[in-house]
Length: 442
Image 1 (cartoon, rainbow, N blue to C red):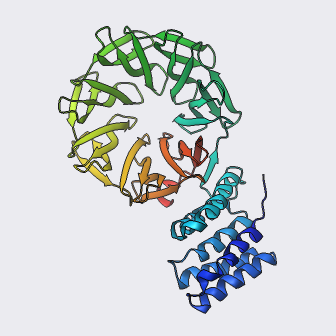
Image 2 (image 1 turned 180 degrees about the horizontal axis):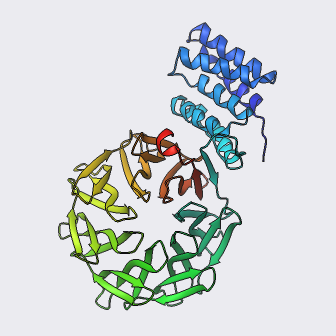
Image 3 (image 1 turned 120 degrees about the vertical axis):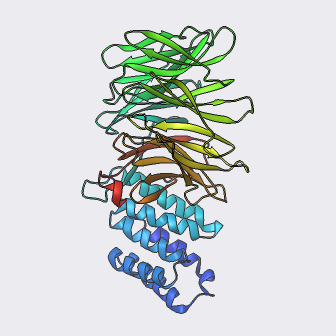
């Protein structure tokens, strides 16, 4: 585990801002000065008390949060520090934000190595060591993650599989020019996605620990891409392009091969979610009015147009294990987005913007109690969020970078995965965890 001491750094920042203190009450200024003195003396607990007192005196100021966050880092309570420093960033003037974000970034990175007795919530940059990476799929317990990385030299996409016990394994390009892993089975043993061959055609692949990569071809079309796999790894869904150039949904099973499910009534279609047993498929299509509609397909009834969820248009992006609930984004007349939750009873719950200007719900836990996604505020900053049915929304912040979005969640709702980005034009895969009782307490 890495230990860092950054008290003097933040003390310099706060003292350098003394000009800003000249117009504040002396009691607030005195508390900050006392806290800095305690940090220099190696007393982070006393410094934290001073920071908390300053926050109680004026919660609109940033200096108290910065002092409290710095003290928490030196007490090795890294995730709490990151949460407090987020509040400091939100309140700080522009010329102070960069330093505070760097402190928060350090705290987030160390939190990934924090000991078991530290706070329950942890975030970790998976550290692929490449220019771009994104995490898109997780096993039931979140111990296996899959996604895509791009290298710095050839800019080729490689599929990857990360495990909690062994770290990242590069699955390569599946014999093609580039590959993307898009989903993983419940136990983490089956990975699906697509690759581009030498002739620029997209093929579906299925990878297992025992057999390695299997080229499933173009699903009877000219191109095909897999997006989701069932819990047992036996059913794959995605899109194919047929000989006429039409986009259709496909469903592939181990015993029966490919089934063309058609266009669901649209000109463009995307299959984005599958139930645990593979019997329910959800997604969206673009209709004649050029607005997205949600669809739900079942073996019994085929494709059903669920409409636009009360908005101008709507996207389905995730489904529960039993296929009875769908989450996604509904577009308003002004093109801003809200998260929504649809149930098989026909009820649509508008989840709003989670405190931001626009929001998107990207994934849902197996039982529907946890939803994750991204919210963008009026200033353009994007944060990952985790919504819990019993307690509401939880802002997961920017994961220590400039912005972040949550793209997936484990079936039990305890692990959130996604992508964060920084000013260096790089993207990072992240993994955020919570204790199981975090469903109601986080």
